[in-house]
Each structure stands twice: as C-alpha cells, then as structure tokens.
Image (cartoon, rainbow, N blue to C red; front, side):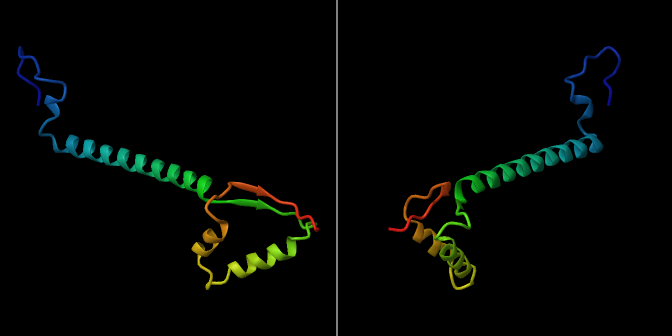
Length: 105
C-alpha cells in the first residue's frame, strides 16, 4: 500500500509488507538461491573427493606385470572383496597417480 500524499514511506520494503504475492515470491527466490548453492557445493565436494580419494595407475600391456595386475583387478571386482581390503593393501600412504615398470631380476 502506498502512503498518503505528503507522508514519506517508512522504507523501501514497507509498501510490500503484507503483500502475500511479494512475500511468496521472495521466499521462493530465497529457496531457489539456497538450492542452487547446495547444488554447487555438492558438485565441488564430488570433484574434491574424486581428486583426493581416487588413485590412477598406468601399466602398459607390454609390461611383464600386466597379466598379474589384470588378474588382480578381476579378483577385486567380485563381491567378496570389500573396498576396505583394497585400502588396507595400499598401506598408510596413498598416491594420486602411479606409473610403474616391472624389471625382472
């Protein structure tokens, strides 16, 4: 509602107070902004987890250890192996990217 002529408004938002359409729209815009921030945060958390919790290892097919690693990966895919067994086998330090070459002694 507009104030009577000659009176100054109490504030910029004073004329919108009590208007249910404005209040609902403002509430929906806050809800939308909050959901957008949550979506962005979830994406950033997923990227951070992917960068710090996954390990890549490169073994060429010409490497002598390739058949062994392939067999080990196949065994890990079975349901009786839990992910924690893999982490226990890695030891306490986990590298981000590993490139290996096998030499036979």
